[in-house]
Image 1: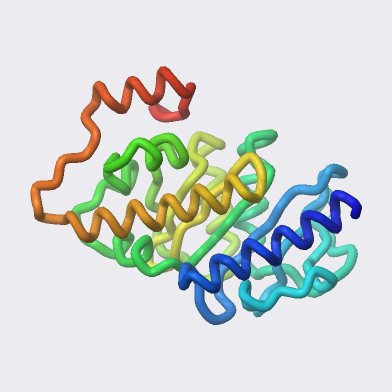
Image 2: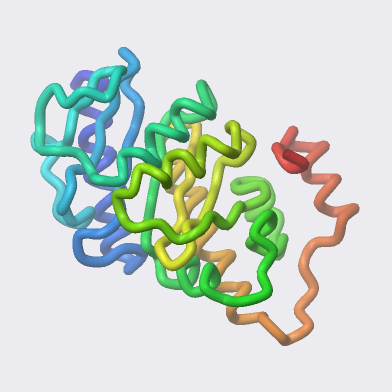
Length: 217
């Protein structure tokens, strides 16, 4: 099996896993991954992540032109911006409309530059600081410009009233990280106003130093 065929199967398998566990519903959310030639495989517009066909995934060249398959997600601007600004650090991008992350994005009083509290070590390790971006109409190219304005300094953002977007070194890493983001948002909602204690500055600095994390950007 070729590298492209394996990646097609992986996109469909991970999409079905996300859908089957309720992290996405209907025909929302999208995944993309970089191919060895610099092109992309992308989930099509209007497609359910739970029922993807490997043969119908959108195949784009390195310039974003559709080579074969169905038309790509209308939110390609988000994906393209992460690939352009994160360089070799972005081998894949995942975008969900997951319940707890969306709910947290709508609450007043959050810090847009540090949206999710550092509740667990893995939220810090897999996400760094998560940035809240404003609401945009789905498919609005301005979403991509908002990501570009971060100049590659963040691997994870949440679009207000919409959902999280995460770039990872590869597809599995991106999916693992966006699942961590949703779980952290769920924990944040469950512990809000309870006095729960997250990680302190010394504990965060230890993680950053030990694992070489992006944190202060």
